[in-house]
Length: 85
Image: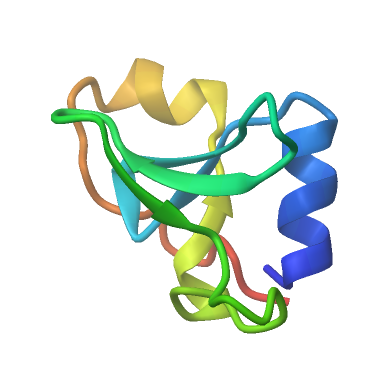
């Protein structure tokens, strides 16, 4: 996913993950896009300080699918083919 696709998905209320389902991209009340590691609450910015380069590869970001969670409870791996443009 590109930076613009990630932001649009988050703004639309979709759950976006990075690398695996333990990482969730969200927008805080200041309008900053962050990546949070859910198990411990640690977070980093979605981009570097310039705001243009992702802190991760585009191919590593994907939108959660409801059926993935239902079929594979507790799964931490990225579904095949997700996040590829």
